[in-house]
Image 1 (tube, each protein chain N blue to C red):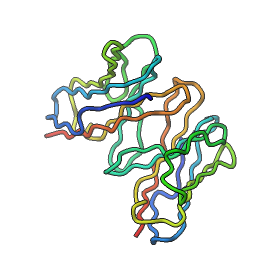
Image 2 (cartoon, rainbow over the protein chains, first blue to last red):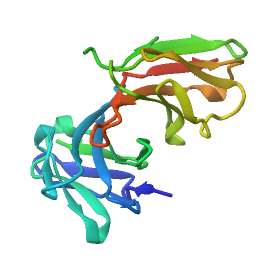
Image 3 (cartoon, rainbow over the protein chains, first blue to last red):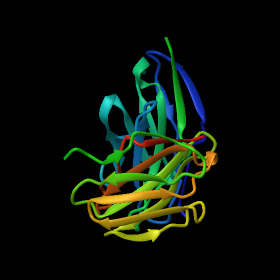
Image 4 (tube, rainbow over the protein chains, first blue to last red):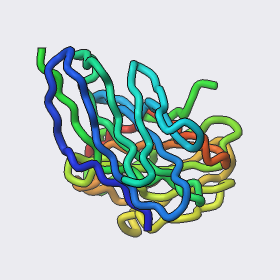
Length: 112
Length: 114
């Protein structure tokens, strides 16, 4: 069965520092991968997605992610974090049944 | 499109009462999902529908939970009777049959059972 792991439950970075959130998936076929962000009291908002082509994908709010098939990873990055980026981040894979499998999430705190 | 619309945004009810959560998916989407989010268990898939037909309800906690989708533009999640451990945020999401389409989430319903 497909699964998504996010090894880091909570990450704290200083404002202006770079960020990398890790995501590993287990899926037998070509994965369709997504990163979402959830601010407190809000629903999940799509940051970016990958399904083919260039393995480095750009998203909203200055985020990018790189797909590495050999490592079964889809890590999210941002070169300079802003205080408003403090939120919960979820990685997900979509299977052939159109179901989404979500990781447990990584909570990001940003220090001023 | 206004996106996925859920109602109510907040619900406070007494233990033993019936609770009905509502969802309107994005027009043209074939799939609808109900999720529950808690601090302890994270985001859990309860059930999902394809073309109004339930495909996988293995995540529904117990018989107290039921979900219906009478037409392509409306779904309900009902809890009867409700219990304090049902307190959570319930999200509805929809997507299309195109695998490249993401799940679009509603704002959620925060349910508190006292």
